Image 1 (spheres, rainbow, N blue to C red):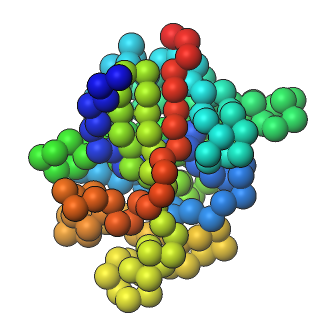
Image 2 (cartoon, rainbow, N blue to C red):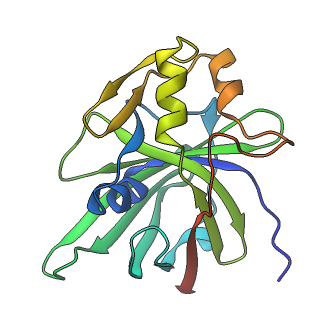
Length: 191
């Protein structure tokens, strides 16, 4: 399969659900990252997505529905581990730079949390890859004063990045130094 990757950073509720449900620490933000909304095409996103076990140790099915395409907003729903409750998330996709780098933020709707999780996203047909920011590397950036933020119980909370700080969060041709390891793999199985 020929996968054309658009580099995306993800902040939003759906991804946060996976992170928080798994008890992982995360790099958190108080508002979506990116310079402007990324316009979504519902046909590219709506449907049922299987999250492969790398991130959560077992497969998770997520239903995705684009709710506001011009603002880059989606709603994600997944069953909790005991399959008795549905967890709802709001995801916002924003872009930055001339290379169409996308950032996605995730928030759990029931909690209306002040902080959201995010990561870098690559996209192919019926495939999405999410690279999670390295908590320790972002904590070092905050401790060294290179990025505004603070250490929190669940990881690192960064301030909304300035245009200059945003450039440091964008993966470059040299790779993704702040997003190590294998990505979480999302595969659309039904539309």
